[in-house]
Length: 464
Image (cartoon, rainbow, N blue to C red; front, side, top):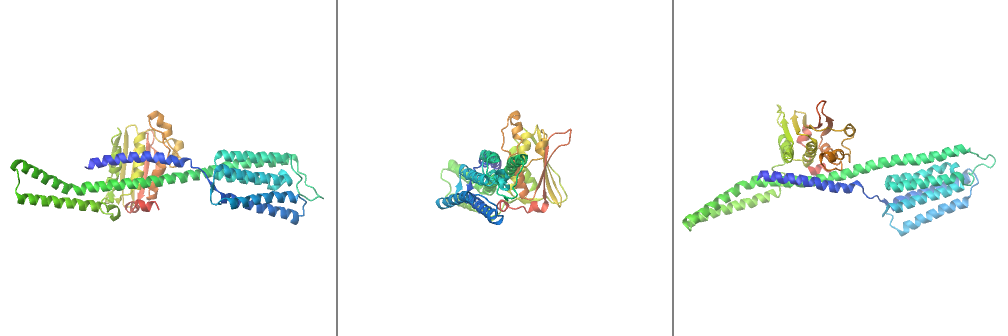
C-alpha cells in the first residue's frame, strides 16, 4: 500500500503546482480601486489650503488679487465635495476612471486659480504634481499618463495666458521669460520623473503583496495535502494487521465450506468472533486517525533523511539521476516537525533543479550540534548572472528564457519566491550560486540553526 500512497502524493503535488499557477495569475494584475473618502479628504484639504492662501495674500500681505473669482472656484469645489459626500457612500471604492476624473478636476481647479493669480509665476504652480503622484500610487498606468499630459498642457497654457501675479504695486515683480521657461520645464520633469519613481516603488510593493498572498494560498493547500498524506500513511500502518487477520480467517472459512460442507458450529462461532473483534479494531483505528491532526500523535515528526527521501521520491521518474548523500556525524540525526512549509520549499527547489539539469542532481545533507544544512545542485546551464543578483524576487523566472528551447512551459516566477519565503519563515537561510568553472550548474544552499529545525513551527503557526 505504501508505494500507492507515494504515487498519489506525487500526483497531488503536480496538481497543486498547476492550481498555484492558475490562481497566482489572478494576483498578477489586480483591479485598482480608491475609496471615495480618500479623494474627498484630499479635496477638502486642497480647498482649505486655497482659502488660507487667499486670506494670507489679501489680508496678511495686502496684495491686490481677484478675490471673487478665486473664492467662487474654491466654493464650487467645496459644493461638489459636499454633494458627493451626501449622495454617495464615502466608503465605497471608485472605479479607476471616476477617481481619475476627480483628480483631473483638481488639476483644472488649480489651473483656474493660477490663471487669476499669475500663472507659472505663482510658486504654487508646482502643485500640479500632486494629483499625478496620487494617480501613480493607485491608478492604472494609462490613466496616470493621461493626467500627466493634462497637467503639462495646463501648465503650458498658463505660461502664455494668465493675469498678473499679485504683488506690491510700487515694486512690481517682472520675471524674465527664460526663467518662466525653466519653471515650466521643471514642472514637466518633476511630473515625469517623480511619478515614474512613485509608480515603480508602488508597483514593486504591490507585486510583493500579491506574491505573498499567493504564498499563503500555496501553504494552505500544501497543509491539506500533507495532512492527507500523513493520515494515509497512518491508515496503511495501523490497519495492516487487523485486515490481514480478517483476510486469513475469511479464507479459512471459505476453504472449510468447500471441503467439509457445513463447518463445526463452535469453530465457526469462534472464527466469526475473531472477525467481529478485528472489524471493531479497524473502526477504532479509523476513529483514532480522524483525530490525528489535532492530537499530533504518530507521523508528526520526521528525521532529516526521511524528509529528504520524501521530497526526492516524486521526482525520480523523470530521467534525471538524483543522488542523495547524507554525511553521518557524531551528533544524533536531527528530527524536526513534519512541516509542510519545509516540504514544499525544499521540494520546489528540487523540482527546479530537475527541470534544468542535463542528467544529474545531487542532494547533500549534513549536520552538527549547531546547524542543519541541505545543498541541492544540478549539472544544468546554471543561473544567469543578471537573474542571480535578483533571484528570490516575485515574478522573476528562468522558465521564460528556456521554455522554448527545452520544451517546457513558461512560469510566473513565483515558485522560487514562494519556496524561499516559506523556508525563511521556518528559520532557514537560503542562498543561490553557480558551480565553479569549469563545472556547470546551480547550487542552492539551505541552512537552519539546529534548534530551530528541530522545534520548527507547525504550518498553522508559520502562517501567523
